[in-house]
Length: 237
Image (cartoon, rainbow, N blue to C red):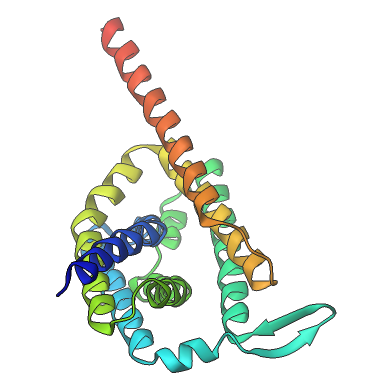
């Protein structure tokens, strides 16, 4: 482990953790629809599946890089395996986020039957998590390959970032569940990421720096609003 290797490991771990935030948010929102006794199990299994997928893609890196080769063209766009995966994932994320926002804004079903129907099964939630894990894992692996040359460093960075995700996922999920405005904001972030994936799938490019800056700025403003509301409420009491 040279100094350069340590720097690469630290940088890649930080990058993988940042890239995993959207994955955690998506998993947290989906897991909230599962019965309470199964939430921790489904959450941990979803994140573990993400790690397995990323390591599997990493060890088949030649196949992954082959996904960037054009398969067919439509008008002026050339579509590769990667672009098709990003396009499908982006459309899925847009549709899912829109549905969840509608469900949240319109309110929970009132009847007990509707409430039971609203509770999704653990298997259906895991399948949805798996679909997005594939999309996020593909982007994560391509980023890792671009930042490091040693596969051991890539594996170590992914494992460390996933451990961080496993530790923080429950706290993030509980925080999102307790604050409806944060949940709407998180769904808006996922909608934004879905648009970004769709644009990249169509051959365009959107810098992730803009996306994460917008997310950080919006979250900071909302946290300040929450603090202000809590302070005003305590002063009234």
